[in-house]
Amino acid sequence: MLGQSGASKAGAVTVATTEHTGMSVEYWADRALERIIHVAPDSQSIIKEQAEAYRERIRAVLVHYIRQAIKSDRTTLYNLFIQQGESDMAEILRKL
Amino acid sequence: MAFTGDFMCNSFKLELLTAEHNFAAAGDSFKIALYDNSATLTETTATYTATGELSATGNYTTTGQALTNIDPVWDTDTAICDFVDEVFSNATFTAYGGLIYNDTHPSDAACIVLDFGGAKTATAGDFTIQFPAAAAATAIIRIA
Image (tube, rainbow over the protein chains, first blue to last red):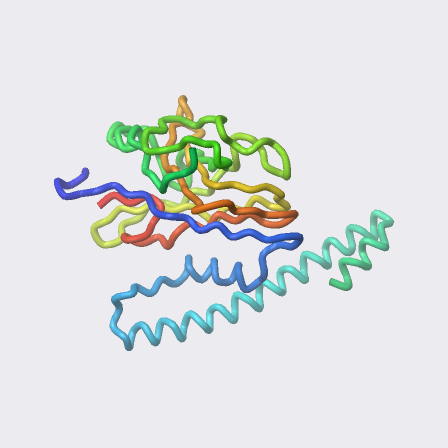
């Protein structure tokens, strides 16, 4: 139920685009971080500092594992191309 | 006519009070359609429209892409709704704004008009819609 002083509002999205490439690992790590940790702007400074330090540690973990996931996927694709006789494509992927 | 801001559609506010939308993760299917600068989307937009929508080129599909709902939650005294960031991959197009609408609703009811603040262009790349932080002051849909 909406209160007498209630209000319904729409937020604003941000659009990010790239040219001839996808988004970076760091970009996606930051997007994930926004979902995992939200530090309220009006938090006490000591809590905010701890949260920010924790956020940086989580960011490093995310970046590492996203890179590992990309490598794993490229291994899968490399072998798929080899099995299909596309060794040139496989070699391009391997060198990325 | 260019986009003139972000809007919660007037008809959508009424439909919320008659239980016509379900934003739960397993609820209705919502989509986001993208538009060029000829679109005339405002708070009076009531349903999805193809007028001004991007054409089906550059890896864009007309009627847009399905969003992934995140279960609505409370943040202090505000009920908030969120979606997973949406990526149009390998995209080559320019968009000025978007419309979130309920694809499950019989009339494809419009929910939110999004103004991107100008031309946003991807060229053989990612066109990513980042939804705002799911908090009382920022979330994409808020009821206080």
